[in-house]
Amino acid sequence: MEQTNPVLRMSEPQRNRILQGWLLESLWILLQLLGMILFIPLPAHRTGRRGRILIVTDLLTSPLFYVFLRSALIKQGYSVYFYYNFSPFRSLKESSRRLSRHIEKEGLNRCVLLGHGVGGLLPLALPDEGRKRVYHLLGLGTPFHGTTLVRHLSFIPSFRDVTSRSDFLLVHRMNALLFDDFSPFSAWSDEWIVPGSLSRFGQGRDLIVDFPGRLNLVLSGENV
Image (cartoon, rainbow, N blue to C red; front, side):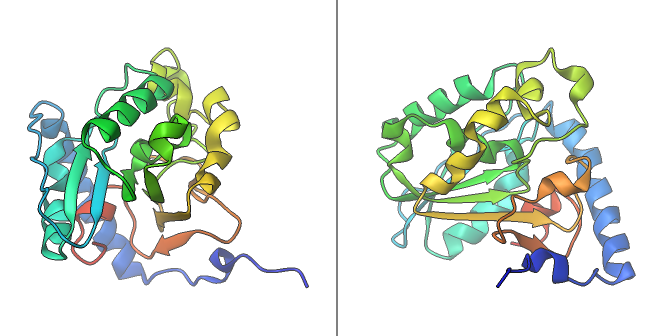
């Protein structure tokens, strides 16, 4: 029997929730402009007993946007580490190699890798040594099928790689299935992934938060 993608059966959130979400997301976007100037790294928390989580940040997103997520994970008993994927002027392949070296440097094994936005694409190109140290890939608003929003900025390496149908995505997208566990989360609608249909990984794996906005995925208390 043919299976129906569960995403297609979801009902649309109430109008007031959509409006509330976009108002909040607009505030975060304004603050992000300041965050692009104030790059203040968050310290790793290494004493958690429940497991290790490595957060890979989105492009041009200040580390300060992850302070609430960091705090919530620490309260749940996790060790929390960061890899800052801030600059768009490196190719995703190069950033993946740097991420692999960071994982080895921190001595991480059997860790959860939580990638926000483009940060969720870096694990797809990890060398084997780095990939084997991650057992669960969790993407938050990751453009697994790219976006058309930055197609006119393809002279910038990372933007070229996240353009829909880029060589990077065509070669590496399905590597998400190489991890023991893979959970793609996405917002109900995302201002960064255009058209919206590109925000779903597919295969019935998508977990949809009924609240709009890419930054709300890591800043909304309800979502976290």
